Amino acid sequence: MGALDGKVVLVTGGGNGIGRDCALIAAQEGAKVVVNDLGAGLKGDDEGSSGPAEKVCEEIRAAGGEAVSNSDSVTNLDAVYGMVEQAKKAFGGLHAVINPAGILRDVMFHKMTERDWDQVIEVHMRGSFNVARATIELFREQNDGAYMFFTSTSGLFGNIGQANYGAAKMGIAGLSRIIAMEGARNNVRANCLAPVAWTRMTQSVPIKDEAAAARRAVMAEKVRADQPARFSVAMVTPAAANVSGQIFGSSGENIILYSQPRPIVTCTKPEGESWTVESILSEAVPQMAPKFFDLNRAPMAGAQPAKQPA
Image: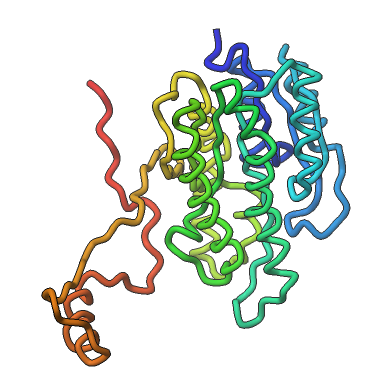
């Protein structure tokens, strides 16, 4: 018995990296899988191919599972509706979406073109909207649906050279949270994951020195795509029915729960008084300054590992 027996799962970006492992692991857990992958390059600016998605399906079928491939783009809403219809026709329904499909067009913001911005927003932010919009009514009607969206520490913490990617990924965190809030009464769940894994994306980051090369070698061995994929699959199973609206991280064998923005300092004037430009600068800002965040990138494993049950 698998954790996803009787369920149908759509995995976008399923031809490579984390998406590939999500599709394979979902199938191992008993799901029937629609494997979507455009089959394009990392920057998303070349022609796609049905090859990567179909190759993953062949692996699933060879292992005794059920899968169909799809090579349409998540940037096209009608195409995503087509993926839903494909799932219904092939397997009789759809119960979960895992959405790691993405591209990178890294460049410093002062050199970023409209195309650099638009393409990344289109795939990540618009793509997340599309997969949610094409499935949300079905999930609400059947009182059963789960989403795993993909955010990034590039948005949660910030990362130089990734203003487009970070902006999209923070937007996805907001989208996931609101879908979770709105879907709660209909058993529609949504979470998002900030993964760290050795994939085409991490391989694309330039190596500047020997120390960086050494870190990359360790990363390739210790931080694998199957680790966040396994967590993603776990979160769309019926056993995780009480988990929704959260931001998670996965790095190696570390599973992380991230905080979400909440007020940390409030400066208030007594009733009848108002803030002025001068008092804001002389009173409010100094009160808040000790809690300001610096411009350094936060450490990845900022949370302490949870103790394992005895």
